[in-house]
Image (tube, rainbow, N blue to C red):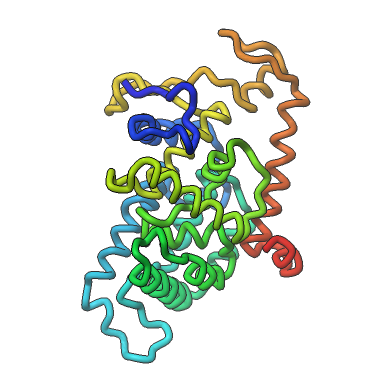
Length: 319
């Protein structure tokens, strides 16, 4: 019966069995989040979070792989700046769905979807194809894909409107899920040993890249543990830290019961107005609960700056 590992694993203490337990909790934790979190208005016409998650981790990566192997997809005339490339690419609707997943699973960014929609379909295809070609070349030159330099490709992706370091890492990760980690808040916090203020810049992503590579090496890359598995495991740890973790009864199988773990989070404190929870939860005041909420606003401004949804002057200051 999978349950939340106790104590929660750190990057240096994570074992293959602990990671397996975390990954078994990913789907029910996501479902619990989807049932309790209000979707952003911009996502009202989009699939729900579990469906978006399937697109992000399974469907869209499979499409990218198929484009690499489908010779008929590369029949565009030579010299056509909008022609797709042999290393795959993304379509505009896929870009929009990936950003919708990012915002629905994480922080809401009301201005970001409109910026993403402003990109022309041909520009999305050509830019992602060029970035994928750059990273494919870098991996071929390196002894292993993890040793490749991702930043030339990432910075090409960041030329798209509304795309900063975090979103760029997501677009590259769907092309190389085993090697490229998504710059998620929870992954950053886990690697740093706790919640840390984010600027969403290239330097921080470099720390994420090296941190995930170190975790994979510690686990043994030969075990088939990719960056994607590490990121999802860290996300579960982050949800537990926010009081949104779940234990699964019945092994996570269909029909298994998901119950909220015994961790007191910010939302529980706010509902209880600082009173002690039944079952011996910790005592916090309403004032204490407001502190993370203020930080969320600050972080939102920082990611907006990185993702281009504030004036260019702020963007320079953040990157």
